Image (cartoon, rainbow over all chains, first blue to last red; front, side, top):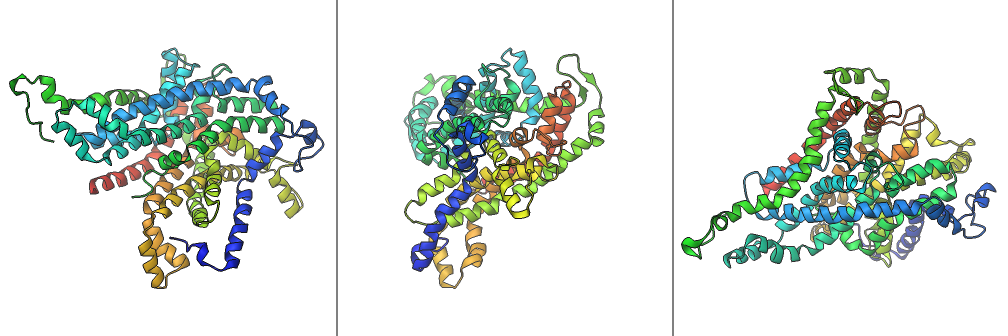
Length: 281
Length: 305
């Protein structure tokens, strides 16, 4: 193990390490703690210059206000409308592409695989003008479908990379055995491979959920109204209205951050497994 | 792949004899279709648009290299390009910083798992929220950072209002989640470092930085590769933070190419789609240099298997 386990060191070293951990953590999360604290302060505290002290009382009304006076709940709803279908679509498509690229050896296999990989890295701006134009022509501009279709297509790149690597690591004997039995290829996919992909599906779902929930660029490019905008874009426009009403900005930020954070803590193992794919040989 | 032994004699259909060759294409079809429509074709279309003058509505007007010639003399484009380079260089700090935190946290004491998750926290939060958090942190008069500089130097600095420092302020905000990402990659990597090699090196008297450099880092190469890839891409994609924290200001000094492209293409003073596309093409070509390198390395690894 590297570095040398702290348990093998002197008592002073162990004590210092245990003391350093919380201090480092507080420093690391300082911006987050500041925002969390500000979000429960009444505006009178901020007006009186109480920026760093404890709140004079816990002002839950800030949360109430951003959610209902400023309709943040609508933006949250819109985000779910976009995120959930995207997760289902991208995972489904990549189960298919991953199976094709991970199991079969055919000409063009690597070429197609690396097309997905490379496409996944391109800057969004090179896609912006044509995708916006296409969305307008399809008549779905400023609807959830605009975002859902684009996100499914774009995320298929990353998901294919993930699924293909996962599937090609499965034991090949299983598939060979099924073939010898004369099982049809699509049945091999459905009954042999798909059940084994559960952990990969779980990992991808949480990752894609977070990526799409946090997307800001496409949300601003493809949607314009409060009825359709996801929460990232909504928060940005509300921030313009709130002009430094920091108790509201903070409460809004916390609300917008909650769903992916909850997802992360509930599915931590899958999340990290997905994110660190390829970090070890 | 050899064909299946024929179990049914002459009865077997055309589909049965060809299904192994056809199945992968049927499985690939929907994915390739979506990807072609929304990713591959738009790249080609953007290249085309960049040779036109187009406001998004009226007919396109061919201008040849006009947009690119205009870019060359556009002061704001040069500022954006310069800022992109600053982003790229400083963003790379996320890799060693992430490694440092990973080494710090790679212990087995009570509660360490919670610490690891909490250190990773910034990555899960949307960049919009990260931008707002740092805007609060830098806020003039009461921001924590403002107070700190006031206490240290007598006068406080409002980072985001200062044309000289604002870009650096935004980069620091971007580094926060990026370091967390690199950290988690390295924590996973460190978990898989071969213990016998470490012990052997320890018996040979290696420790500290020497051990890190000669024994640990070579084993962390896959993690380092991914950390570099995601950091380069993150640096070139820096749109959200600029948009939220300064909207390109003060005096346009924090623009980056991704932001400037958006601003030009969908500007309130009239859409310039063609000019925007030209900026996007430049950004794409810069990114292509890196993408080509990454993909080349991945192909080599793939063939090596």
